[in-house]
Length: 78
Image (cartoon, rainbow, N blue to C red):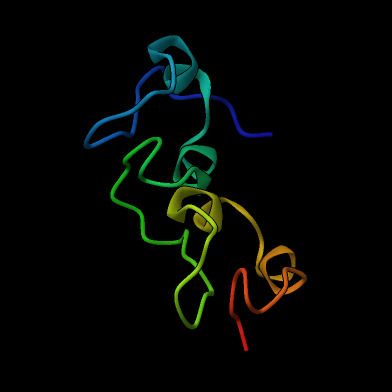
């Protein structure tokens, strides 16, 4: 695993503790949804194709395959 950089890569709000931000590699920080730790990265996204009962932050945090196993009436992806 790459070493931390002794700095945070957040450009906005974050609920991740500062000490943790400082030791995590940038690639890890960018995988966290911006609603939790805003790095400005756009890699996290929802795969919903319509209105979803799943909170947006959860949609962004899980892999596409996890979203696809939910019932269409709860979280449409088709």
